[in-house]
Length: 510
Image (cartoon, rainbow, N blue to C red; front, side, top):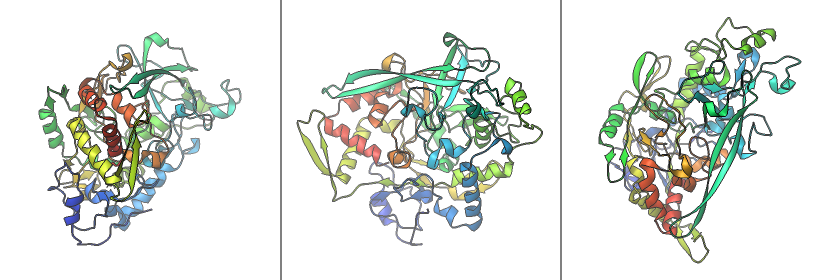
């Protein structure tokens, strides 16, 4: 389903009026389509005016208007969604059988802990989460590497004794939640939950819990991937130089990583630990599908290689071509970004105080505008930067195809793409996962882009936020902010009840 960006050469005067109230609207550079009433541009020519379950999974107009790009986008979409099987390269061990399995509708498939406390979901056996393990000193364990792959081919059909053939999974994830109740300064109650992870069913020697760190990732929303790859990196580095607000305790930093033999600025991933969209890594690490960048099986040297051979698996050729992976890369770059929904000027919304002692009714637009003011008043914009720009030349895909359509755009991702120390004080550990990625330490996290976050419920049927999905909505995500985010969290909790409700409405409009 494609959005309709109608009216070539129509006026953009409306765009300035609809632009984010506190953002710089002068830089908006779209002059060939109408901005629909009630919306504000999020990603220049890649903006979509959709509020449906395919709001993350629809091609931008610059893709749809080109027969060749549209053909390749459609092909990449199919490769992204279609499941791999052993005959086409799946395994021997893997975490999921397709990109789309974990990224339903290019979003965040509901993780299994929403259904039960441990293992995979009762419906499919899959966790839809990535499980990272390290030694306490940060090094990896022999026989396991950095990721626990919780499935082996045919294992789910034969049981764990493998009496009838199959490849052993490396282990299974178990999670138990620790709950704690809190109150806002005005008495409003809220609850936070902290996961405690363990690994069971180790295929080789069991690793003692006291000897390892476990950190888990739920899927990222694939919103604005092309714009992230086209970011003006000099602007990001300039933000890092001036991101020093001692009165707020904020000091953002760039993450630099070495990929393809070059030291590069990291912008993607939870810790800004990647400089590209990791298509080749996803095929390899998540699905066990070998490719030109990662030609070895992920369980190379492990028992699962022999088990796979006994089942007839061959390891003498690559499982996916570079051309196929570039079509997947094009699909990700070509996805549109949902416009911000400003809200109706006639429909009203009533919020009730937490103790039901009073209520307040405003139009949707008024709630969102009040919430945006509270967003700035709480200092959220100091890290969730509202306005950035893409470099003139756009982006380049993994096999060299250039995408100039992504260049020269003014975008509103609500992120500075910098690392910030999020502290360890909340519930005793905070968001510290003890995992190092490039220059990012355990406490350090890239500012999450907020564009599209308000549609996650519509697209994926849940509102689990943060890197491991521990937050069950925007408010819990805010209340996990410690370290450099503590001052903003304190300001948020000291707002009046209706101002907090408005700020949450504003986040829901993004």
